[in-house]
Image 1 (cartoon, rainbow, N blue to C red):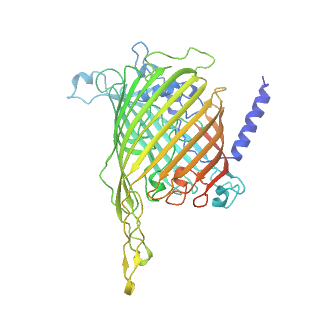
Image 2 (image 1 turned 180 degrees about the vertical axis):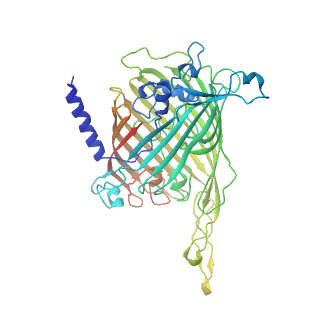
Image 3 (image 1 turned 180 degrees about the horizontal axis):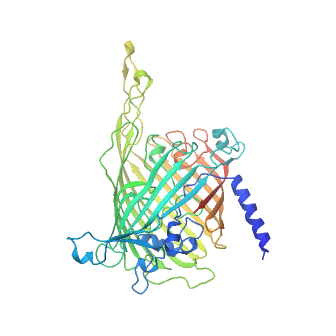
Length: 498
């Protein structure tokens, strides 16, 4: 075992390496809950924001502690609160306002992150950036969270994000998340819950949005529509979306979600009617139950995160993306957006397994777009006239497959490797394919200070319609009709939550 001074030097060295190779994350952990329950981050997390089995149960239960012997969430709450009315008012309703409570102190927490990237010499990443290393973006984002409960059945989550000039869009301020969770509306506990507002993300699996040790989100950030049309806005399974979701857990181990959220639109076009709907079902074998109240908790005091389990998830999604088909005329040098509605159907699934400290994931999504392609450009006619181009109304398909293997060596040190594969199909042309391999290590210097070192290796065959793998997270650029393999970047993420 290292002496205490040696441990400090080790953490300092890791911090120095991580701060040198830093990328931009958007990870989320909420110390508001540590304050509410007076408990460590490790109660719910391994290397945050990844949740352990108990943390996932806490999230699925609507940010409430799983019940023990008939307890309720307020039984384990330690932070003082202010009562908004007397409990007797419940018996007087509707002649009195239903009572509630708020935290005595404003339940805020802050997450700071930022990034730079080391682009490997000769790579497409270096060519695109024009450098191998630059410090721009080391202080890129600040997230302000508010999270807590109004009662044992009503909880809330809110997130404000401020980005510097290195963000996208530059210098932006955004309400990323703001929703109420009305839990246990009727029937047995956890069976019927209604979440409404700006949701974290549509629940298409039994696991939270940030369940990958090596990537910002468990489902790849692949905009399939963006691989066919640069104005497409939908990325399947990603937040943050306005809408409503009905979800619940039955028999401790069967989970479901049904949602209706806002559709996407390109700039300059009218907002369409909300048409995006989804359904998801999941089942967990072994390990801690989905709600944390059906047994299976780990009894290993040295490895409380360890369990043996297998979770099956399937989902279906129907959506609408209003695109600019690129056929508009260009008066005064400004193109006129021309509306084209691309209706989307998607199905997918995820297998999530754990064997002690070994964590494995394998997911597959299939997307069908009925008319994502841009049409022909406008043409000039006689006497300075301009004619709109012709829209392309053909359909397109894509497959997105992803895998990840991680091993929790210690609660603060998790090596792993992730793979993401995207294939697009183009009528009358060869398929385009991209494979990304992401090896890395996630680690904690302290419970609220995180580093992730990772690499990005890419293989591509052909390019998508828009001529760039950017909407799939890739940077590699093979020549038309050819394949290419490159190591693109050495990355790391760093975060501080308080």
